[in-house]
Length: 352
Image (tube, rainbow, N blue to C red; front, side, top):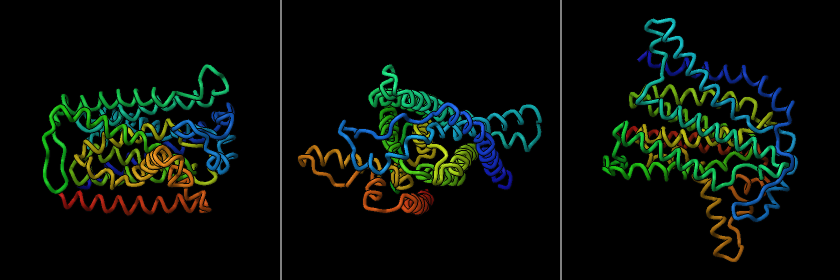
């Protein structure tokens, strides 16, 4: 037990300090090459203008770099390499224990994190270069969705064929055999979490929420005796906290696609590995509520002749439009995430 705790906590600290150490170099690069959007504002998913959002954020999107999420996945990757190299070069019981890279627990989430983050990095770069007509403001939603579906297909196939997982746990009822249907279910969950990336909209919001969620899953995996996965989730939380250190208001940079895309897709993998996917909407409640608010807004405008449910979607911007200071919105989201994660962890423990 003691060595298991060390295995989780030590890499977490390493990832945090790696993230802190790399930030000055990343900041220098981002500001030197002006890696921010050339103009503020955005359009809604239905193609319409968003005047309320643009008024609230007209000065925030220009002058603050994107790509800050690089800190998260690079710090995780570096930590994985450090612990693995130590276990190979300086061989003893402690270094072997610190190595949390394993085929059945961490290969797939690591692959997902890196591949989706690189995709997000490409999208960020294209958005920054949107003044060149060649890029059209980044990858289209359809292109990103197709790539996410392909990543989900690869992940679902790995679960089904390599890990021989063919069931979904039904809370308080046991496991339900789904066979090959696990693959499309996996793709569906990953797509749903992909849509929750809209939570990356206020300084400190996505970083705090994601750090809490992955910390909760580190605890869930630990109690399920998936120690490698627990360490991996904790390392992601450590890297995210390093990002958050510089993202609290006023943000030095934004997480953007290279961060949020990697985190949401990896969260899908972690939920399936811990057999807790149906508990995910509770543990990651703010993600689902936020993406749900966008869906509700779009459906309302289509079915009610343009009438809106919220002043502006996603939900956190609705609270801004009501007059809440951004920091109040962010901190209350953190509190709700903590409470939801605690309740979710409790139910999962009771469900075993």
